[in-house]
Length: 177
Image 1 (tube, one colour):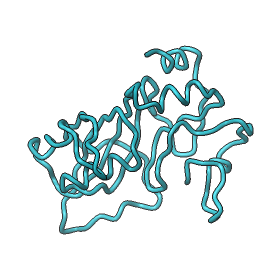
Image 2 (cartoon, rainbow, N blue to C red; image 1 turned 180 degrees about the horizontal axis):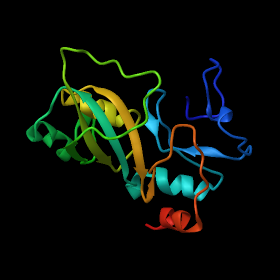
Image 3 (cartoon, rainbow, N blue to C red; image 1 turned 120 degrees about the horizontal axis):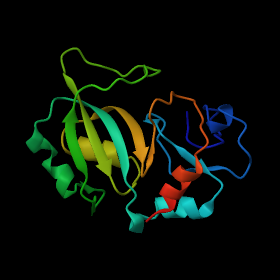
Image 4 (tube, rainbow, N blue to C red; image 1 turned 90 degrees about the vertical axis):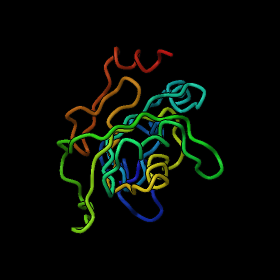
């Protein structure tokens, strides 16, 4: 589903999830092929705080990639990767065991002759399709991408399509610099 409320092409949007009020909008976006945590708010200061590159808000992802990188293959991610003429900020990246995630619909295209592996990647900026582009640049195209954290807010056991209102404590955590 698109992480917006309307789509001229008629694809599924956030509007189908829940009866959100008209003044709600997403904080950042996930591309159509990505999954996971998406914050929605009507507070422009939260939106501005989390999206401003100056604040370097951490976003954490579980990333299934084609191929099996060794730790040295991840070094460019730590140093920053040149994407569209600009170097990314350094990221954290490590190889992890396959996580327990809900089945993806539609399923990820897996090639029997090409192995895959999982990474945990933390970035502190939010350029368009950044994690996908960083991984592709290092030779490991993304098969599945799931955002599991934005700053202090974690996806936890929420399932696709579930909506949860943040607690006052969670909102205060978002506002801390």
